Image (tube, rainbow, N blue to C red; front, side, top):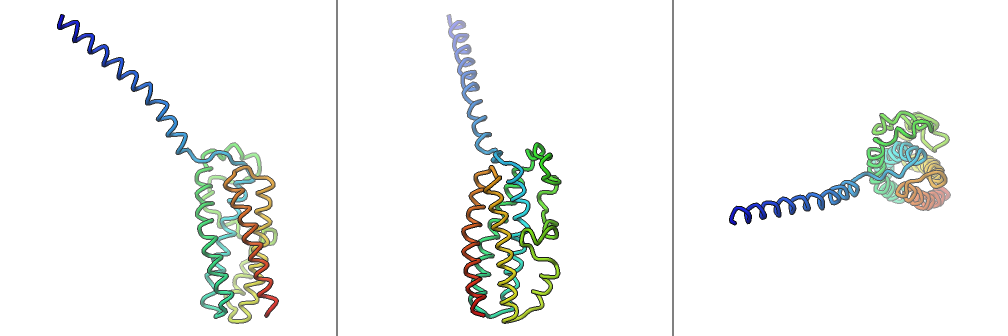
Length: 207
């Protein structure tokens, strides 16, 4: 009798363990799904992120020049705002590129370039700068040499052109992008940088 009771208890325990294992599988699968990177992206999204990283990096570089070359408070304040806004966006864009990289091979046929080097986009700054508003090496060298009022005027003109390029790139993302986060950033860039273009045109008109 005791033996039958012990056997029955062991069978019940085995069934309970089996039930727990069956219940744990969906939980583990759900957790994996929740931590997986956003996969809803296309060629336009990657092109936007790849291009905007070096574009923002150059804007931050231009902003970093300001404190040592002018005492104009309006220009200095604008440069500080540009740096504060664009550096966090660079970090987000690089995060997206890192998350998208494993699944990007499916888009290779869409002229996206070499996805194997998505973490290093600096070379794009030397390509087609007139289309995207990027400054050339000569532009940056001239800006570095300028001082005071000459620097202010040159910096404002260049940053207006730079912002116009960013707005153009952001509009292309809204038209052809698929990733909701990238499209939201694109809209923010259009709104914020167009407002700064208007501000800089006002500052430039007073000089």
